[in-house]
Length: 228
Image 1: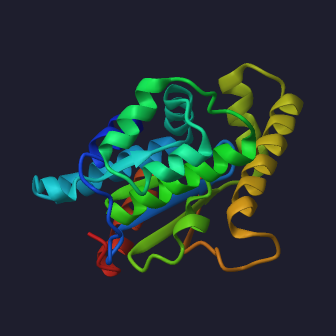
Image 2: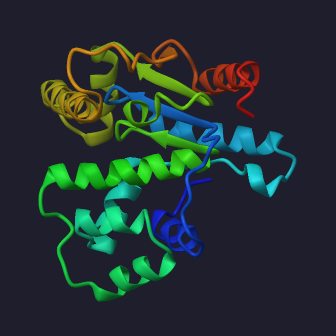
């Protein structure tokens, strides 16, 4: 199940936001360009929910970078206002959403800071799969968490992207380098450079492993770690 972040924010602030003394459980998934992150996040949430026995308090949802971008554009918030929202009741966010008075995208740095606060808030509530967006750097301190990295040989990834986007192998390789660089820079924004604090728990080779196999191993590890 994929989360609607705009609706999440509206529902979340109907009551006063108080710190969660026992955050999680959560799963973060980072990946190299061309690896099937969305497909794995979707299948993982489906697999986890099939085991929850219809417990509405344990419904797993997943969120990817595109939903954050859509929410950021729709909310049109200044970073200072978003920071205030995370400390106030629903009435504050209602006022901000209705005002529609200021541009959200002032600069990339502020957007990242705002999204970081949103990710952390969702992680504190738990039962969320975070795809990309520096999730590991923002949540590594949460005990009930599992951090996944999807990788594959660059030639394999380039072949997939070349076919999907109808471009040459050279163009696909250039695209991969650009996106992988941006993702690395994004994680560094939150975790800092030259640090090994955010090492992933599990690495998967998407060229040699099927999506279903990866999901099955993640679920098994979550069972062992008592994250379900």
